[in-house]
Length: 309
Ligand code: AHN
Ligand code: ZN
Image (cartoon, rainbow, N blue to C red; front, side, top):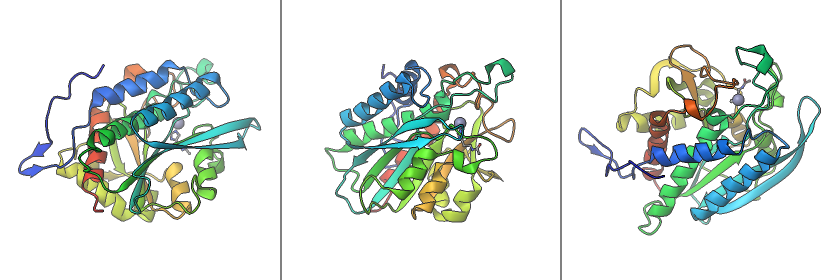
């Protein structure tokens, strides 16, 4: 399964990164494994089994895992059982950063070109699966680095539930898991220096522009992440050519909870909106692009490995 990834260090001109190499083949395998459960829609068996898979995977990579279970309601009125999954490295370290993404997938392919599919659940390979795949591979790298004590800061991965069951025109119907967490933390008094939310980080023809709420609430974090990407040669992915839009996403809830947080969210290079597969049946494993996973994952490792303690 873990093939490729033979390079030793990222080297661009005379900069040698202290970070290990992010293995996109592993990240891809973690996306495929999530998709194999079937769509992770709220209240489904596939959802619950995949939640177990994610928690178990982080534990196997040496993280301390917390669960946050909560009841909520979709905007349609359907009651739901949510599970936010939080995986922590160096849980005692006072200096912490937070990396997040949602793990549920949408139960309506309501952006599909074929209207007959609008009530069909999506695999959410990119929309949901890609963020968790990247986070799991970062977690694996943290475990590999553990013996040599390379990373002294604390790193918390938060897998949000119930992000993607919202309705257009109703901001509060999205991001139900992060809304809950922004009020009730998994640990009393939990805080972090800053957060980075990942969303749709595995598509083809993907570019990341500086999202506007991120610029408003956490401009120095945007600089840090985009700067890290430039340093290691991923400036085509983390682009300054354009500005992103204002996007309702889980990072807003983290900001509301008092932790500056940005959103790294994919835009289609050919359109100027979300990836072409967004909320369509094409959001499946066939359309996952390993180079995009690599660009994002390697940039995250660069951020973590260069963060001062
Ligand atoms: C809105 O469409 C309002 N927000 C998009 C957030 C989202 C959905 N990200 C992935 N899927
Ligand atoms: Zn979505």
